[in-house]
Amino acid sequence: MVFLPSTRHLLRAKDLVDARYRDPLDVPTLARVAHLSPAHFSREFRGTFGETPHQYLLTRRLERATALLRNTDHSVAEICFAVGLTSVGSFTTSFRRVYGISPTKYRAAHPPVERVPTCVLQAYARPHSSSFREDRRVARG
Image (cartoon, rainbow, N blue to C red; front, side, top):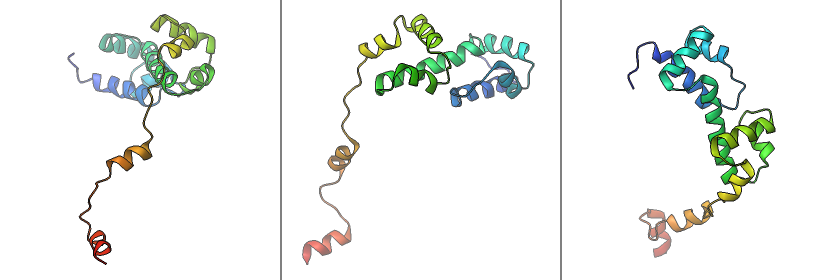
């Protein structure tokens, strides 16, 4: 992909979507970040990144939703709102269109991986012998 000098402005808008996908972002807001008119911004964005700004934003939101479905026990509605969407029905429809199954079925098909608690990892990661002077003084005394 070859980026033209004006593409730098499009990247600013894309980075804004990546960082603030939860926020109510729209084409006029993104176009202002790119210093382009909304219509010109939409055309340039699609030509550069292969999808419309709205599609890109929805994709980021759905990707985050899949992570939340796999790694939390939040309800589908809570996840919908957490990723910046305002309609559970639209969320479910979009999710099914992209992933082929409902959010609930996705969660059932992708159970969370059991994780070792951080405190256990830290305990096993500690060095067995220490070279700190304080430790030597205690051991001698």
